[in-house]
Image (cartoon, rainbow, N blue to C red; front, side):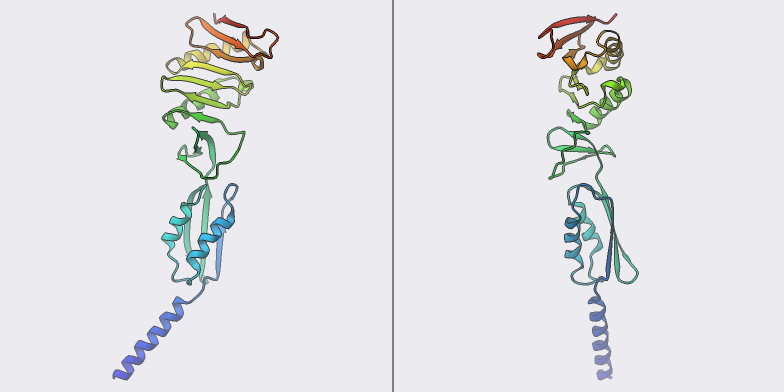
Length: 231
């Protein structure tokens, strides 16, 4: 009986050892990789698959993939024929945030180690990114198309909003008066500054009766500053 028992134990051990040594036959990795090299993903996967199919810790593999820059979401699952299916969803940047972060399409912050240079993305600055995004979204809806896309939106601690238009012209308003002043600005820019924005350094809308304008030095009326009546 003991011999049979030992034989059963030995046979079971051999079977388990054989199963544990089954290699991973195939790994399917899917995703649209624009910012992260696929080689970085492969290195992590190889680390967890080297000891065989059964030994792969799916949770740990997924968690380590999530630590890679530019990965927003990752999923890992086993498949038939001793395979793995890895799905990667990359971060899709909506804007730069302050000096070191970015905002994704889900309006969440992330901080990639390898920042990209994309001139089509606006630069947003402030204390709370969702509040600044609300200002940015409002401006994109309200401002004339020829003044878009916006290059920068800054909301200071004193609630002053500075907007860099596509013409490299700064528009300055108080956040509390944003809606009112943008309506006034639309009138001023269409009626009195049409075609001249590229020659203006900034327009300060923090005046009760209009706006202060500073012209760029390259403009023929160098350093001219005036007050436009918005009535």
